[in-house]
Structure formats: C-alpha cells, structure tokens
Image (tube, rainbow, N blue to C red; front, side):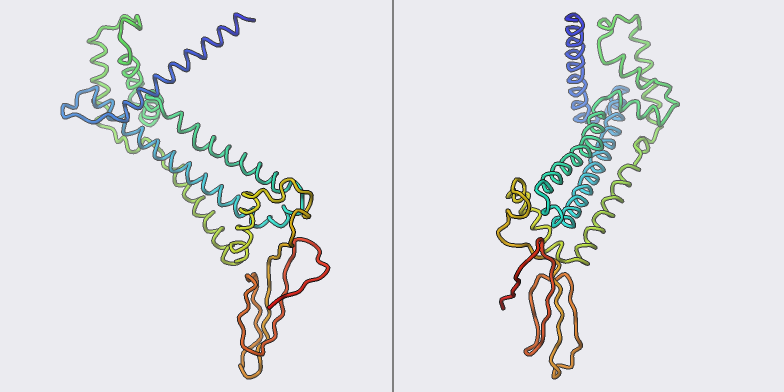
Length: 294
C-alpha cells in the first residue's frame, strides 16, 4: 500500500511538471511573431498560433456569453420568486446556494475546463489534424520530434529525416485554410442564448415594471444585508413588503376623461383635482390594518 501511494504521488508530480512545461511552451507560442525568413519551423509555429488564438477567442467569448445568460436568468428567477422565498426561513439561503452552484458548474463546464484543455500545442495540432486528415499525423510527429533533443528521447532518427518531415509538414500547412479549423457553432449558439435571455429579461421588466423597480433591488438588498437568512419566517422584517400595486383612476366629469387602471406601479399617484383613486396591492403577509397617507 505505501509503495502504491508513493508511485501515485510520483506520477502526479511528473504530470504536474509536464503540464507546467506545456503551459510554458504554449505561452511562448502565443507570443511568437512571424519572421521574414518563414522557415519550416516558423510556419508550423505560426499555424499553431493562428489556430490557438482562434480557439481561445471562440471558447472565451462563448463561455462569457453563457455565463452572463445564466446570471440574467437567475436574476429574473429571483425577482419573480422573491416574495415566495421570503415566506420561508431558508428560502434565500437555498436560492443563493443553488445559484452559486449553477454558476460554478457553468463556469467550470463551458469556460474553465475547455479553455484549459486548449493550452497545449499537441491538442491544437490535433484540431488541425482532425480538420485536415490529409496531414496524416505529420504535424503531431513534427512537434513531438522537435520538442526535445533526439539524444534525450533515445530514438534512432536521423536529423535529416526529421528535417524532411518538418519541411513536408510546413509545405502542406501553406496550402490549408487554417481559419476553418475552429468551428464557430459554439460561439453562435452562445450568442443566440444570450440574446434570448436578454430579450426575456427586458420584456418581463417592461411588462412588469415592479420587478425592475422593487423586486430586483429587494433581492439584492436581502442578499447583501442577509435579511431573512437566519431569522424565523417573515417576522424578521419590521414592516410588510408591498408589491404589484394597481391604481384605478376615476376622473371628474369636467375633465371628460374615461376611467383608467394602471398595473404594476410604484405607488405614485398623478391625477386631476377631484379624481377618485382606488389602490390595491399584494403584501408579503396578512395585514390587520392598512392605511394610505397622502
């Protein structure tokens, strides 16, 4: 048992070292600038750099779009359900914890892990090989054979053979359209989801103005101040919370105006002198007495 643990620790250590080396090589690759000579090694590095930047940009912006879409939908859900959440002692705790878990999973699944998997020259080369099978693994072989010194790998390949392989790979890369290697479907889908989320959020906020004026500020206030997190029931609030205020106006005869009803208002009244006003609202608790002070 101790020997197995030691062996596992050694393997983990060597994998970590190799990962750091790959990351260092990848950073050098991204900082590589084309030279005027355009030799075979330069063409290979330039090709890898082009595809790597395209893959990173595609994954980065697509992941950010999905993450922002998730935030919008969670914010909208919290605004719609805020009064229901306040009715339970642990309602906001469950909502907050669930939201953080969802955001973390989205960040991990569609952003961090896919982005981290691209930070390797061989994986970028695999993307090119899959798009253009005609390379027949020559790109992967060129990278692997030129990464370390031949004597360290103890492989009986002549330097001339390796040079011919690199030159052949470079000649094939010159004829390929590398801008087609990375599929843009993920970025397009992410933008569509973001547009749909933003449309739904804006539409609901326009149709139900109280969500934007009161529910969202109330949600942030509860999350920041911790109200309702540990108090029992709704007794933690000194004053009842009022929402969905509806105002009906009956104008005086001299105005010639018809009766009008306005829904989801902030409670502000604007009417002609002599008008009759009727207000109705939804409270977060049962009220014994309700009065309106003008």
